[in-house]
Picture 1 (cartoon, rainbow, N blue to C red):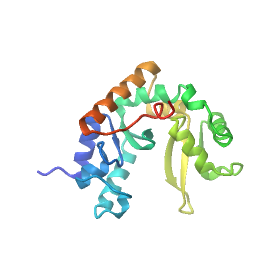
Picture 2: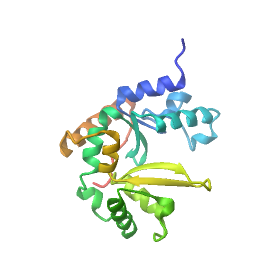
Picture 3: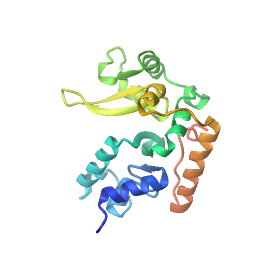
Picture 4: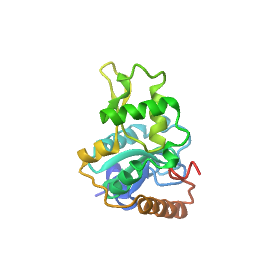
Length: 205
């Protein structure tokens, strides 16, 4: 029986531990489905609907979390690496906190206080979307996108501790070891596929 697009994508995610939504060289949902490097937005591709459906299924899967881990791009991370991601995201290291904008600091304080916040409820921030992206790129929060009652896109931001309690994840690894693990994973992928992906903490070096 020929494997479905979903089977191909999820098998690779389990094998690699992480998978990008789209990338010219590194393993990604788009390339696995279309069999070719993606130029521009995947929405214009004839197989866009299949890509969308697989992305949605990954988003809903209990063993998958979405981050901006690699090259500031949408990155799916398998459960096998969640303890490492938790250790890194909740560390509040210098690369995460240094030069954080005033808006992002205010949003982070709000998330810390409440545990979780929806960006559509933020009335005091001028550009909550930009502040949310800043926190995402630094892995300071866990983020999930959803549609409001009016049909607009919004994000639910929560502390890693809040997420970990829901997901049943505990800190079982040191931050330095967790970073080395991700670095080794990405190094092998870059080497194998001639990519140039970087991790969130490497972008600020």
